[in-house]
Amino acid sequence: MAASFLEIVELPTGEIVLRRSDEEGEPLLTMKFSEEAKVYLEGEHLQVAKAMFDAGMQEVAEITRPQSEEEIPENRVLH
Image (cartoon, rainbow, N blue to C red; front, side):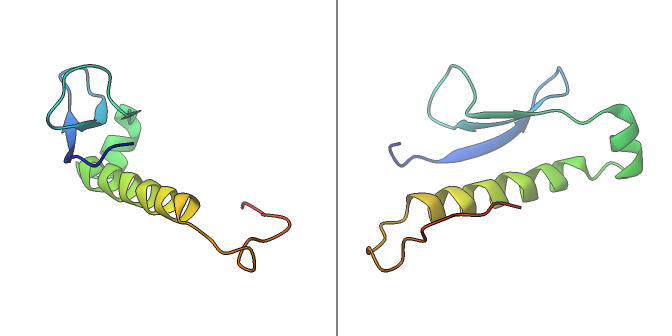
């Protein structure tokens, strides 16, 4: 995936998307909170979405990081 600026936007539909800021088209990721979750989060659902997107991007960076053969585990356990 080419490097570009990413933005997090809440659409009029209530969906929160991660998309490239310089392109039109389909978002890279889409997230939607229920009204119950929004009430529970006291309107801070965008901050939670940002934290979730950040965590996902950090995991992608870890997964795609070049590794030497000694660093590659035989079995990878996800929790």
